Image (cartoon, rainbow over all chains, first blue to last red; front, side, top):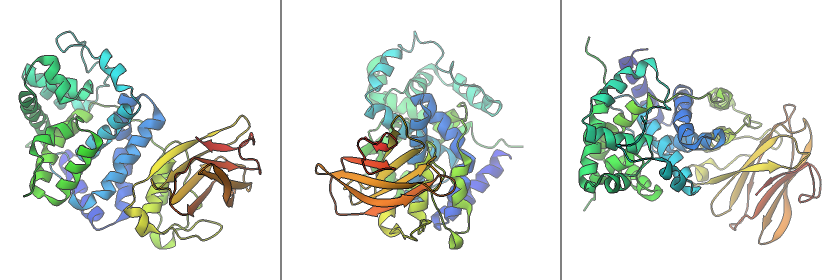
Length: 185
Length: 211
């Protein structure tokens, strides 16, 4: 299924969710729960807790079904983001964040933060987009997404003002988001 | 004057906000199309990064109860593995769940707007199966869902509140070893929940317990 078709399907699913169609939630679950779980698992390294995070995300999807806005990439960015946030919350609640942060090295010394991320054929464009980001934006995105650091921690680590870090995050996310847009044919 | 959380959009997308601030952003976006679009655009970047992640298998059977026609829905208990709470919660939240034995109707309207917490129940050395307990934060309801029990086995559900333990329900596993029970009660802190095949919840080696 092309990305454009997938986004149209998602638009329809969101419309059905907004109409309180519970069967639509099952379809969303079938389509996106596996990758949601993968996102949570990379952070938590535990199947049960990863599934808890996925559960939180799908319950949040239902709670917020009336206000969903589908843009680039369909409904999946919303689910992936909320799942990841739920997984991070679990990490923090278990006080394991400190240990993890100790393992995150300074950006200029760190090994490739993508090293433990399995490549996928459909991810080629995203990898290219990530590689093409200006270094300061790539550092913010990599540390935040793959290193699970907060923007404040990145500001402290890099010595850049927090507002600058936020701006770099905004620009970096915007460029990466464009990597998801359907290609003109 | 409405406060738009513009400066928190990227922090939300990248997971830098605490849970309260996350909730504030999502609730604001529910009612503010402008911020919802900004949030969706920021999330698109995270969605792109997520394509680099490996999917992991989920129990698709958990979604199966969601597919059955709502009008004819009768749920004994969703198949429970580690993510059983998803199916259980969704079933609870979206439909009137009619439990197999007692045709109990769960007050869906109350649950849809409830926050809840959930806990895995751990087994003793001779326990079979697994279970999870969902509860209202104020303790005014609990929902226990279990799988892997002895088929047709009879179980008692015990609860400890204010230091006192009492049996709050009895249930019978179905032919697949699954069981579920919703219990409504006065508000109050719940200290322990036990699903036991016997009458000694704290010494029964076959019981499933939280905590």
